[in-house]
Amino acid sequence: MKDVYNAPEMQRVVAMREMQPYNHPTRAMYLGAPGKVGYLRLGFELDSDGKSILRDHERIAPLIVQQELYCDEAMPEMPVVYILSSGGPNVDGDRYEQEIEMRRNSIGHVTTGAATKIAEMKDNFSALYQKITLEEGSYLEFIPEATIPCRNARYITYTDIICHPTATLFYSELFMCGRKHRDNEIFQYDILSVTCNARRHDGQRLFREKFIIEPKNYPLRNLGLMGRFDMYANVIVLTPPEKAEEIYKATEVGFFDNGKIGVGLTRLPNNAGLLYKVVGMETQPVKTRIREFCSTVRQAVKGKPILPDFPWR
Image 1 (tube, rainbow, N blue to C red):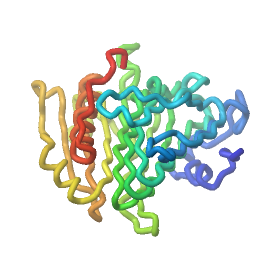
Image 2 (cartoon, one colour):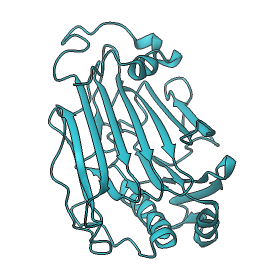
Image 3 (cartoon, rainbow, N blue to C red):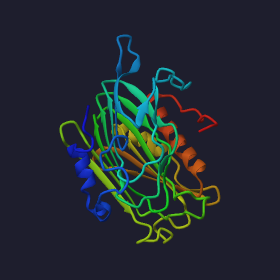
Image 4 (tube, helix red, strand yellow):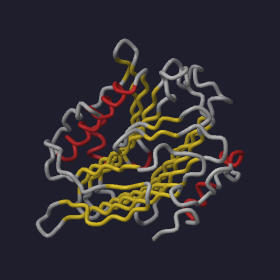
């Protein structure tokens, strides 16, 4: 079983400069204690009948998954996997690692069962390292529910992506301003650090995006930052250049719903794909825009749309 806490990938994340003011021991459960270190590895591949399946998985609680489902009526051949957590919100000193491997020509949709809540913190911070690998011709939609950083929360994520030129990845992140309707807890967290690094299998670098948000030091209501918006979504699409161009031309950008939603789209360097961003006032309209964009991507790559989400989502 992998030693997540002492793994070089996690040590690299924990050593990031912006997190050092918070990198000290916890006064409750010690760093690396059972239940504070979660690990999940998912491997998708085609079986002997050509069906895409979750061939193998490995986990350390509190991260868990159940059997894959085939519940997407638009693509019934695609396995859908829900990542669950048995430990409640992320708290001081939590360390999580997730690996997803899409083998040749496999397809899959991965999401979470609920929002990721980053609890109020007094010691240390919570960290997540992710590695996503896509082999030739594979296709993955990774659309987790929103991340909710509560008052005084500290959270860092680092995602490594290794993508074959013929593969497609739809990867989204949605960050809320906090528990918006609880004691006006808007942008009251300490720090949110998000990094995404992508390359080819031969080591060719595609791009690296990083943003650090510290609302107490740099007010997010300033023009050019969040302004009057409360929700922020970041979507990365890695796909062959001809598909990226088709998606780019089919995507409408600008301000919508009387200025309550803002949408932007740009091309990633090295013909890697597209970067799509959404800001909004409430969570659901932003989620709807993400899903509509995912439908555009799926239509271009697989020739099938994505259906409306389940009402309970």
